[in-house]
Length: 310
Image 1 (cartoon, rainbow, N blue to C red):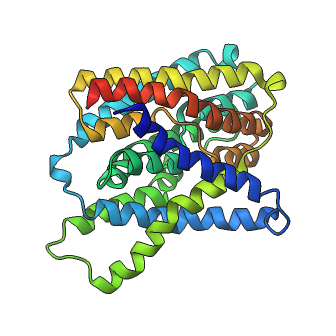
Image 2 (image 1 turned 30 degrees about the horizontal axis):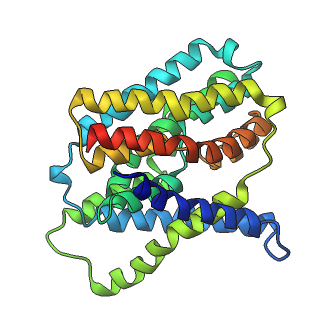
């Protein structure tokens, strides 16, 4: 993979993020309710539709899902364990730690799927759905456990499992795999409805991510930003690359797995921090900083990854 190919994939994503940030400041687009509604539309309908339609048309038999899962889950759990062990060192208080934790393991699905689609034409969205189906439940459980251990009352395991199982992205991946296993194809009229919705997922999602970016306050949150960003953009990609090599996974699916472990944290992490008593100011700084910084670290990670894995 060349530098030009990586740049060609990153530039449109950066442009849509910048456009979203610019629109957010224009009269007529500045309403928080407008962007909250657009984000719900993208997260609960458009992106699940894209994942469903993509996975339903791919041959899962040739993809080593189990080995890919090991290669991405093990590094994520290792980073999580280290952070929990060093919680008093990496954050000044419990609220800040929950934001550092989210910033270290969560990822922006829209950016990940967009990169996968650009760098792996044809099957990128489907592979992103497969990797996401493994990582989305895991990082959501980790983030939730962080809040429950450090800030809020513990909920039942059944309640936690329900939140994971009912995640729209996970449901879309499972339903897509089930649809792909059917002995017949979806009716053309159904495909005609789903395809336009799927096509709108990434541009709408990226615009929402850009609109959600907030001012970076590095002076106030320097330690948290450095720790979480180093873990997310450098340590986790390196561990994942080693894991993929160790379990013998290569090719496009390995590259997509590396992409998801190398991108900035999820914009929805800010909402979770605000709702559950985390340090929302630190979370906002992490989202903004990692979104920008990832465009510096990603080319290097992808060049190394493509040389080793593809």
